[in-house]
Length: 360
Ligand SMILES: Nc1nc2c(ncn2[C@@H]2O[C@H](COP(=O)(O)OP(=O)(O)OP(=O)(O)O)[C@@H](O)[C@H]2O)c(=O)[nH]1
Ligand SMILES: [Mg+2]
Ligand SMILES: [Zn+2]
Image (tube, rainbow, N blue to C red):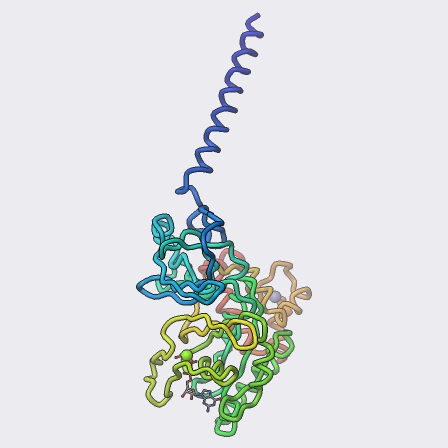
């Protein structure tokens, strides 16, 4: 009979536990503070579908400018709940967000379909540049400012991580004739290294009009975000392609530190269909949450040799009998790309020195 009593007791406690779990689950579902604050891809929990819907077109110190389907604008603050969560992510609301708002306050942020983010200046928080965008127009120039292939790699990886298509826009082609031998060489090396990657590359010039029509058509009915160093001509390109008059900067007035002409990201509705976000230029770009796979899947030109490495998990740094190192020595891999691979891999692994010591 002891046995029976135990069984009964167990059954009682099982019922108890079940009820407790149910209660706890219910409490968690209703407790908004349990919403995973660091997960920027999730939808915020309050949804009242009767509230008006709009899109965040710009963010400033005063709040988020939200535009509804009729084109009416409203400067919104972040409502209580969102304000609390703002502590966790650098910016909880981003340009491109679809939101519900009430009495000039954002009450709900819709689930994002894509995002472009970076590390904030401290490296500890994720900073959203733009969300719900189809493609990133990674803008560069060959000279003035000079080409920075490593920065381009960072943008490509970040774009793919966030579910956006990367497209390379090479502006200021008119300046090619003024380029030094070194700059021309770098440009040639860049083209031969990047053309095989399968990422669209478009050469343009706002001065001569080269490629402007092609740019306009690749942006038609899509949402695009222009990104790149300050002074490469992002705002000038938008103006040239769509007849807008965004403020552009005089390069001669920019210091070597690069004064930014565009100061905040802004979502523009394009004549003829589509949207585009102009962003302020940046100098450096730390990819948020970068891991080893992000790096290896980007450097397909390097990874193609890896099946011939002695070790299946070879990272092509200092391992013996490495086919990538051999290909590099034979000139089959661009040193430009390898250098970028090495620095991004080091970043992804945290401490490259410890890692190689442990491994070899
Ligand atoms: N030679 C030449 N200059 C250009 C071209 N496109 C833009 N520029 C010049 O480059 C300078 C910078 O252009 P912006 O459009 O302000 O550059 P941006 O990328 O928007 O810069 P930020 O807003 O600071 O990030 C301006 O003086 C433009 O006139 C081009 O195709 N050729
Ligand atoms: Mg600009
Ligand atoms: Zn290797």
